[in-house]
Length: 436
Image 1 (cartoon, rainbow, N blue to C red):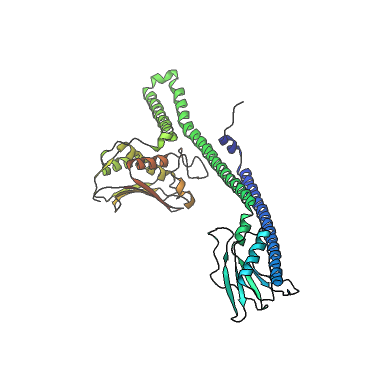
Image 2 (cartoon, rainbow, N blue to C red):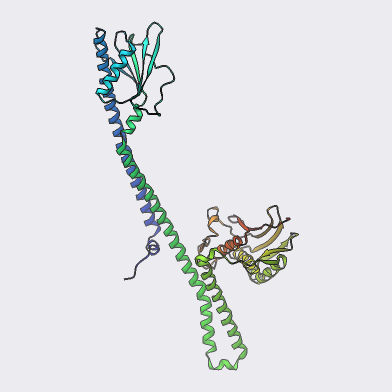
């Protein structure tokens, strides 16, 4: 059984199916992210609540130790007040000695495995200020910085101390290591999904290009093959030898159509393969004005047949350039042919040569249907043809501008495009020339 390639698979998928796959995939990713965020949030809230309870119990024990040490009684209400996210105030109703307080704090925290760096301050009712103690480190963590300003006061108590846990939030984040791992896995899934969607879209585009190329090639080959078949039928008639002029005419048709097919096959073989990006350029001195006149004379009958006009305006002081005459001729012919294909109702084409700061500029202008802004970057792609709604409207394989860009690039020149929909297109070839 023959195998089916990716291109064939995606060619069979219609736009609606691909759109549904994309939407479902995006919804699935959003759902996974939402679930992941919910569980991470729940884990963080649980860890925060558990740490707050442990800290509160530890500080309550410190308050009891101070009360026993000073033979004082604690207030009936809970002595620990959670002032802010990482700052606590402890009401002890008795005088506090800094060294004793620090000893009790360190001992109690070690018992409860609270390895949090903290800094404390003791309220002085005489100066109405918080007297800063110091930053007590359980580990050398350079990310933990002490508060630069004074610890907050409380107007509800007279004898109290405040304690600030500088690394509390960091410790909570570090405790969620397993969730970081799950988040990393989710990130990999999202990246894989995005890559998969990119592959799907790229394969769909390739499938469309392939289908369009086959349709165009069928049409391009069908007409000359029909002419060849008809001419072959005519020259096989016994009485054709009695009409030498007619025989010669059909022989010319066969030769002309065979040459046309040969050129089309050569173009596909040359530009369709990997070697199409690198053309062999043989530069010689070329009289540009004479070459343009010759090319315009070749195109003029076709443009005249379309009831159009072709104008050549040469305003450069440069007469000779270094170029490959064959490829330069093909470049200009392709640009003129492209302008003719997309000229619309008004076939008004001009070739304008002028001197500018970057160098010599050759402009091919038309007043045709133009190119939508979103398609400008793709007109030089291999096999790409600006959609017109009908393959027969604009013949070709989508290789003309691709070849033109590569030929210009191989010369060391530059090419750019300016176009407005329904107003026309200007393609410029910039040729660096010394002294311009």
